[in-house]
Image (tube, rainbow, N blue to C red; front, side, top):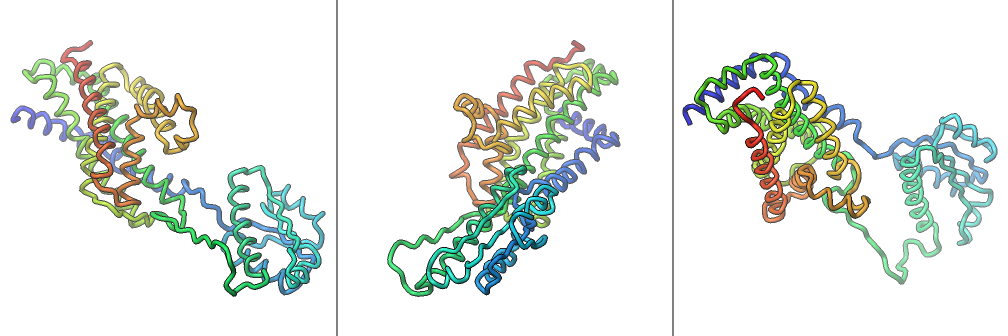
Length: 369
């Protein structure tokens, strides 16, 4: 252990002297979280809407007020007839057009359905679907209030939905914890592999070869500083997730740190494995990015739901460590899950970490080959 301690101290000194690597490992995850955290938001608010109110009654004005007071729509302009709406949608000045037909107020007062048309710009399919969903909820609520007997007890089944863990359905609460997993993977997979390869290029690996160090001591000594940096990044980024983006941390941070260590064992082992197989930093960057990170990112469920993938691809996702770590992060942050729930993920991460470190140790040799 004394020999291993000397290797760790040597690596920490070398890491401190690298003026480019250390800032990238500390500042990089923070910058990535800030950039991706604000960008990763599928909530649609302030949708520009053009209004065609051909009824001009108190009922039509009340309906328009519902749209504008919801916060989902803003009034971009008005037109007297529906034929003039198209230019708003073509120019992009509005994404939605609300057309209230003549006689809307009279029909609703008489207990008959009023005619309302919603025109949506479908060139942005995701925003169109969200906008139509907002409008449908507003129109349904308005129809219920305008119906005869509103406010009195009516027979039937009344559904009162309740959303748990994310009651406001904020997409940022879903994406930001996943970005934490992404930044940790970037930091602890690519940069360690490049650091080891850079030592090969500089010729300092020869100094380790002539020492009586065992391979496992060299591996542990090189990876330990990056474990410390990964935990420091976890602390910094988690603080930003909670205090800047307002995502609640309902579970145990100690459990999160412990399971993060298991995930780091996988990413660090894969980074060391890449460094043992390549000879230049450029090769390390390409191998880490395109052979490991891109498949893990696409198949982990961070971007595309696993349930929507074909069955063979769904089976392949079970070999992606990031899939299990993303479940850990979202479970601890949003649901307050404990080890009694996350133990399968912990076992998978431990298995992946042991396999990655084992393959890296078998590939790593104390010789220049």
